[in-house]
Length: 83
Image 1: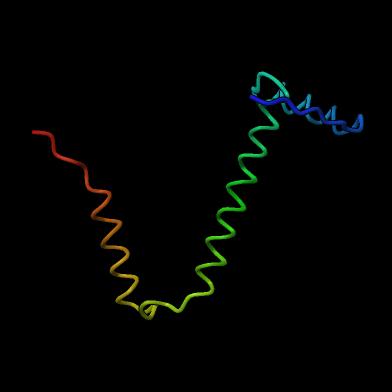
Image 2: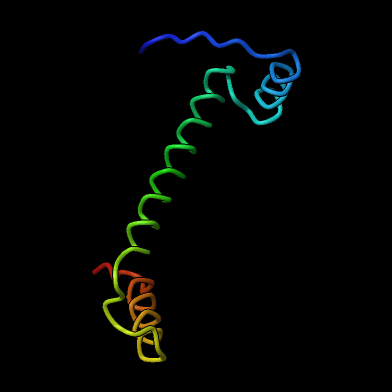
């Protein structure tokens, strides 16, 4: 694992220390790593949304479309039988 040193104003250092103590992080590094992971996730989601927005819909979003989605969710939510 690589090391990175950062400089923070006192107000931000206090904020990080408070988050570490109140939210159960072991170190400030754990807190910062979590923030970076969340930012990566947001950027990935943004990229997927922009890519999706740039494509034409495969089918119209009408009553049949939404009923089909509901059926898929209902099917996925069924408990698996163990026999």
